[in-house]
Image 1 (cartoon, rainbow, N blue to C red):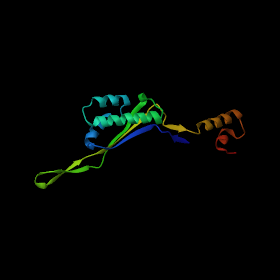
Image 2: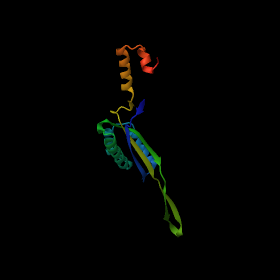
Image 3: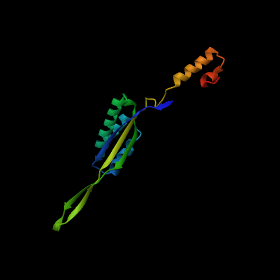
Image 4: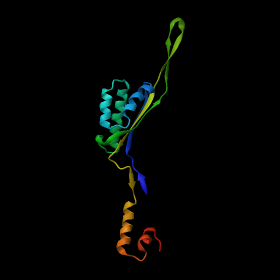
Length: 153
């Protein structure tokens, strides 16, 4: 049976005080790049969203280093997405006792890093299958090769 091993670690930032459109402008630049290249890009870009995304990428790499026991040189940004959060609504006082609504948008950012050195799938029965093949070939039993594999007589 083939099982899927965990090769991804992620970091999630919720209720970050900026619009999703502005954060998405930066996220589109780093998606699919290596971890080290991403850090260099984020340090040099002049946008306010870079600092929050930089912290999330750094946190995702720390999570991968802890949970997957992987090295930072083997990490790539496999998934980076920005979703809109709730809008913080305030009222600004205006002249003659009126008020003007102000909406401060928030966003949720998810960064997932993947270790490219790890194999994604693991075969549990590969050793058992090879043992059965070797037994049937070298023992020359009356069942033959396929009889030993599938248990036919």
